[in-house]
Length: 191
Image 1 (tube, rainbow, N blue to C red):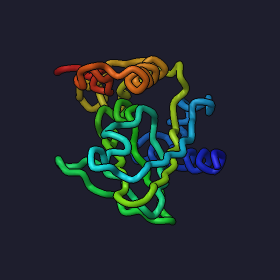
Image 2 (image 1 turned 30 degrees about the horizontal axis):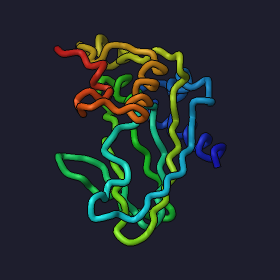
Image 3 (image 1 turned 90 degrees about the vertical axis):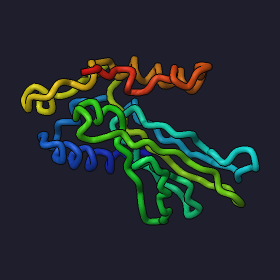
Image 4 (image 1 turned 135 degrees about the horizontal axis):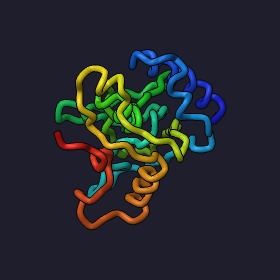
């Protein structure tokens, strides 16, 4: 299954590069180490009276994520101050842009804020394939989206591995205050 997701990821990488006005193989420069990719199977139990959130609101740190959800559904995307349910289908995949693409494009493409709500009566299953960046890769807004068009960078550069480790720490040892969670805004530049 991982090899199929990886093949699809290579196709999507080319499409996203072209949508950004970059050469089709541009993002492959960030991806010469496929060991950073990961596939996660998720099992959400039915909601309780106290909790219906299977996975709280978040963005994915890598390039993009390919998601499959079963016919039960539960995936929601945040847009225009609303949570929008993504209709489940056996024959559909969802692609969420990640933080790396948001930074490279200087906010032209936005990382998708999403969550999973637990079903009310039955278990829910989904799979997420994280199409990541080589750990030691430097990530910063590209000149095509900054100086070449007269815009200031919205982010300072960072090593993906450093950012990814901070995000993992968020999950394994969450800070007491929600505002202390590390997001891509940690690297924002105030203009």
